[in-house]
Every structure is written in structure tokens, then in C-alpha cells.
Length: 331
Image (cartoon, rainbow, N blue to C red; front, side, top):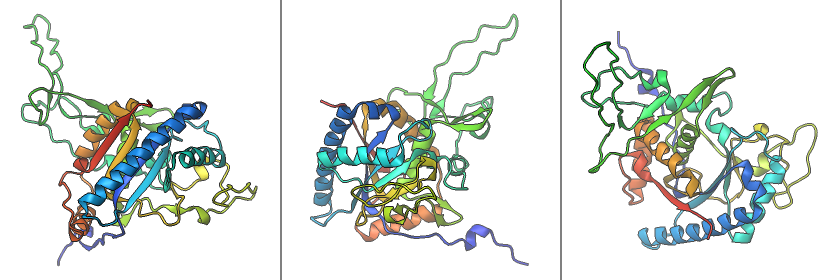
């Protein structure tokens, strides 16, 4: 009798990829109270998008680069957002004034659960933490503690009565350069209502979605839904002026990823750039620690690598090295 693993028969779904995915903003509820700042951030992001697209075209030898833009709305930690129709109108107006095109709009809550799929849990299950030599096993595994670090933390005191005083030892970063920058990241905490995912964890899922490496039994996760495909509920809604589409009253009823531009290049890309406020620097440091520990579907990674090679592009082996950032403050 011959036994085979299910994964051996699993077929990895393939799909089109952009050369670059540019995140042009991450909206918090407070941003809506600062329309001038929102417009300034859009104008600054537009300049970076144009510059990055031009630089990419030169790297591709003059070929037209496939660049898609996206925007993430925080409906996970803030449920008091304006209705989708109003918020999309505000974002769209700010983008139009800046000469910026937004191809995709995504909900941050979908990075936690996408329909019936426990997406953040799926990614958390793929985190592989390899304790460096010298660790004593006193720290519980990530799957139980909900904490992930990029090295070895300071050891806890032994607290033995009348014992020799413990000598403090500093934490140490893995693969450090001269000096350590140690970081311990909280991935989730448990609440009376269930597990509450952290902002860095959801942002890490968001980055992996944009890289196109997440699969559920070989099938693609996070297929954008065209704006014209949205069906209004029984209450009916006023159309959005530009798209002529009707949006649900709540963000929970919205698609996880909405395709605003019909002719947009693919949502997933070989590389990502995130144009964010400098306030996100600490969060994205944590995101890189998480993404560096995730081992995604091998078939997906291999498929994307071969696709890039056919286009004459060499991708870094480590997923985290495919992420780039532009942190800004309005002038």
C-alpha cells in the first residue's frame, strides 16, 4: 500500500501579478477629522507613486511597468467609521485633487477574518520561530504566548532564596549588525469576546496578501471584487457619483478587497511599497519581524518566483526583503 501526503496532490492556483503594489495610505477614524491633512498626505503619496513608477520603468528597460495602488481602511479597531459610501467619496475626492488613482480599497478587519476563513490564524500557524543556541526553553512557544521576538530576550531572574544574585544579561538580536535592536511583538491577546489580533499582525497579513503568497489548500486568498459587482441590500442605497455603484450601509457587508478601477493592474505584486505616515514606523518594524518568521505555501512562492524570472526579474529569497517603505510627514 502506498501513502501520499495530501499536499502532494494539491494544486497551487496561479494568477497575474503586478510588478509593484503601492499602498498610498492607511486610514484611521481620526483622519476624517483632518481633511486638510488627508489631502496633503494624498498629494505627497502621488509624488512618490509617480517617482516609483518612473524608476521601475527604467529598471525594466523602458517596458511599461504594471503598478497597482491600494488603500487600507481600519474597520477592525474602529467600528465608528462613516458609511462606506461617504468614506469612499472623501478618499476619492482627496485622491482626485492630488492626481492620484486608487485601484483597490481593503478592509483591515478582513485581514483577521475573510468570510469564514480565519486568515490571521492561518498566517499565525505558519510562523516558525527557531530559538537561537543558548536558549533554555523557559519562554513558551509563539502559538501559546502570542509573542514573537527577533532574538533572545534577557533571561528571567532565578529568584532562589539565599542564592547568588543573578547577573543581568542584555537581549540579543538575531543577525545583528554590530549592535542589537531587540523587538518583542505582541501578535494577539485574549479578551472575553475572543482573540484580539494586534495591529502589526493584521498589517503583516496585509503585506502577505499584497505579495500574493497566501493560499488556502492551494487556492488564492483575497480576490478583489469589482465595484460594479456589488449588489445592494433590501434597503437600497444612493449611488456613488463616479462609479454609479451602490454600497452596503456597513463596512462588515463590504467586500474584503474592493476593485475601484476596472482597468487596474493585478492587486498582488512581486514587490510592495507602502507610503505611510511616520507614525507607522514602529508598527512596520514589527511587521517585518512577523513576515520574516512566516513560512508561506512553498508552491505559491515557487510559482511567483518562476513567473518573475520569466519576466527577467530576480526576487529576493526572503519575503521580507520584497517589502519597501516611504515614511513621511506633511511639509
